Length: 191
Image (cartoon, rainbow, N blue to C red):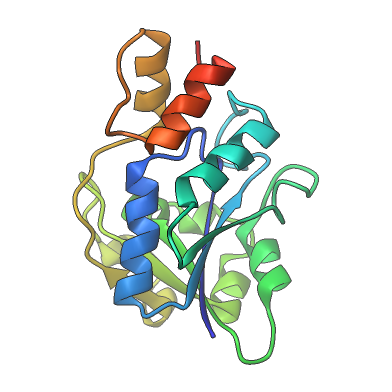
């Protein structure tokens, strides 16, 4: 089995997150992509929505996508969440793992917990992202052979932008799945 793990706070999950998962599954020939919702990222501040609301939004967003699913390994762990520990959780004989990320995340890989160990446990699937050229000169040379890049439709959407638009009373239609938009409205999140 070829498994992709895409970790993040997903506060909220948006269309670019979904596209990354779908593109990775297609280009890297993954059987499944798991969106692991982090309780707290060690490289970011606290979250705006609750753990359960973020988990539910991820479930709503991935509904109907046969290769996408949601995991709760990270959210059930004490803070913060580390990719290396998540990958260890998914280790099983016969399972090849890719940890998925945007090109912006690759540039901070040296700040992650035990990046060498992480890259011994899995490969990285890195999507091109607007404003973040894949500059391998900026990452450790020993990691290059463990990184698979893939093109992705250029969608310049961020969770920060979605939250800011909600707070300003502006539409988020087309930026998040309709089910996620309805959930945000019903729960009055990010106001």
